[in-house]
Length: 243
Image 1 (cartoon, one colour):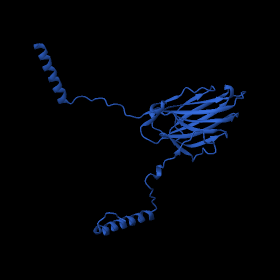
Image 2 (spheres, one colour; image 1 turned 30 degrees about the vertical axis):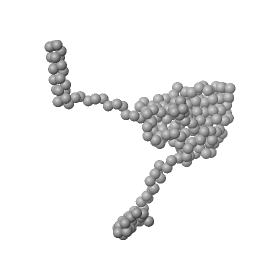
Image 3 (cartoon, helix red, strand yellow; image 1 turned 90 degrees about the vertical axis):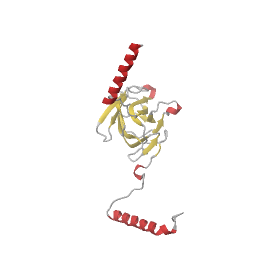
Image 4 (spheres, one colour; image 1 turned 60 degrees about the horizontal axis):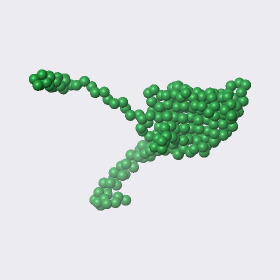
């Protein structure tokens, strides 16, 4: 039970164990819940690329790719498509963006929405910005896609970007300063009256930047240090004049 423990110490160890057990029973009786270490922040499954349907992307869904977790999905007005997640790894020459995209939407309706949350699960980076885009069959005009970012409460708007031309991204939005998140992203897709395009692909990308603190600006010299520096400067000038 206690390897390499002297026999004389076993009674005291047993007594301590019983004391801890008694304390735990008291806490349990009082209604407090003890969670195992790390249970509250259990890691979500790894994200897949082009492997999910809308029926899988629900409020209870969560997956992690690199240092970002995508979760809390909610779609309205659309039922088709295959969706997935990619990371443009800088170690492989990429730009570090995380992208959520869908293809095979085959959408001809008047509009749909979808929301999700992205948070950083490893230290080192902040959100730097985001962008959105879409593609229609034969690049037919008519759709507009607006992607907005909100604080974690889902109601405090941070900023938006929109795409209104097929196969072209929006102008993008930059967080100033960079944002540690989590960020709630909300998409609204609309179709202009009198048009009949078919939307095939959607794409949202999130950029990042290091969250290193700015370098410290040196403060004023202490009074003694400033006086010493002035004295040294005066002696140097005197030596130069005598040379």
